[in-house]
Image 1 (spheres, rainbow, N blue to C red):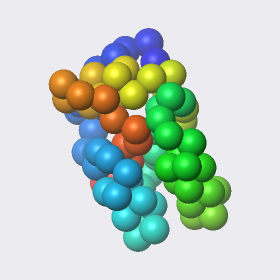
Image 2: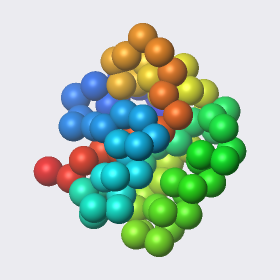
Image 3: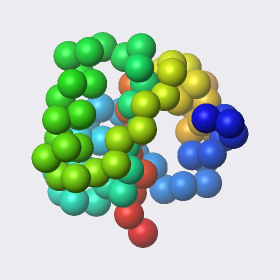
Length: 83
């Protein structure tokens, strides 16, 4: 991620429950997952993205993903909502 604030301008849903909901409902255009997040959680979203054919992008840390979304805490995953 060359620009650490790239998700601030996009319409996103942050967090595990919201991201999974967006993928399952067909509203996710792309999903970002932090590589240092709990593998039990990230493996589920990776399987969902594969099933629903949603682009999945890995980010190195939860802290960096949270910062990219403009929040002060880390984020395990984020869904970019289709416009």
